[in-house]
Image (cartoon, rainbow, N blue to C red):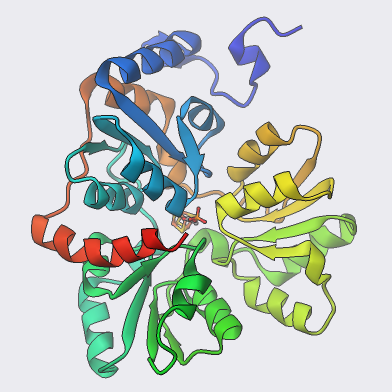
Length: 333
Ligand code: 13P
Ligand code: SF4
């Protein structure tokens, strides 16, 4: 029988967390959370130990909604910088902390506010929709913001005579264009982790698990081809689901299937396995790891809880302008 937490959870880091043994560090984080009246929000790609410590684990939309609803004084955001920035804009009366300010996002870095302004100038009258994976100053230039959980619904809600500019993810953009039939111009940005999940990876793994359901994040480099295979009847439509990370976790819970092939960052498998210990989850690409998400470690979280560092702030004028597109995002659930 396991005797300690570390034995029960072999995926936790071995050894000390900073100057404290693992179990002391976990207890100290919980105690400091209580003392600081803080809430810990974690994205589905965080390391298992942080997912297990968090008050809420979810996708970008769910985390924004939780930030908006919390009564805590401090939000400790275990995710990447744009997510913490979005929480800071939504909750100006709270302190938003991130354990590592350098936890960025390759997709968010693929467009600047200046580039979006220039693109809008080329398409006067078009509506600018940005995916939440972008900086606050890009959101400030946009009309609407969306996440993977509500992108389809949000694009469909825009008057049909409007041309749409969608940035920065090209795979999600192409997915939206295919599924809405809208005149939609797509920025050629990508997430390096998801772009690397190719159609051949899906074909290879599905051949080994022919009865499994396929769960795909719309940022994946395989999504357009999977949609094409679906339209040709080559892939089973009832067992193929394009979803946000929280949508994938919920689909695994609600489906009768026992095996799931997971096309996204592998950190999500811990969340799925915790909720459904008797089901099998297989990553489509086992090395699909986001090094930015993994910059949030227990050591850094402990430092954040002890020292109240590092606060994420947004320049007031940018925050005011970005809030409009973010409020439109959280209104579509
Ligand atoms: P979700 O909002 O679906 O969790 O996606 C966020 C993200 O960064 C995906 O790479
Ligand atoms: Fe950004 Fe990709 Fe990491 Fe998501 S997985 S945070 S999109 S770099």
